[in-house]
Length: 110
Image (cartoon, rainbow, N blue to C red; front, top):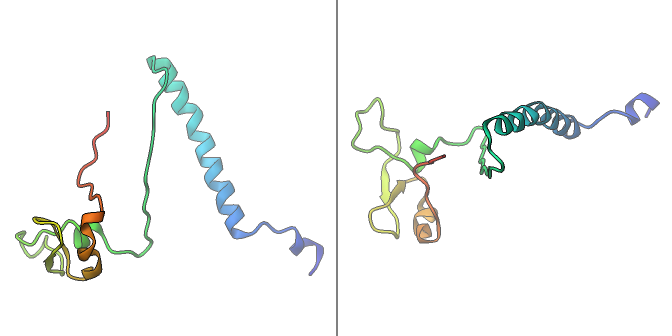
């Protein structure tokens, strides 16, 4: 391995640095805006589930079986072990443990 290759930044490190750089550019602006509006402290939390190539929620959890064909997904709903909750037929094991899950169907912010 020549000297140049031994000092290359791995792709994962490059992506981490890029993400930190973007966050660093926006965080100061956010903090200045909060200070200018009189907000002394604010709590921010995000749970981000990013599935590259994964199925969309409207086809797995939030099915619309009574919707017109152009809006309804290709999957049929099945019942879970929680009365009144149905999920996609492709997730039978998940249907058996739905009582152990918290399904959030809306997000409300202040």
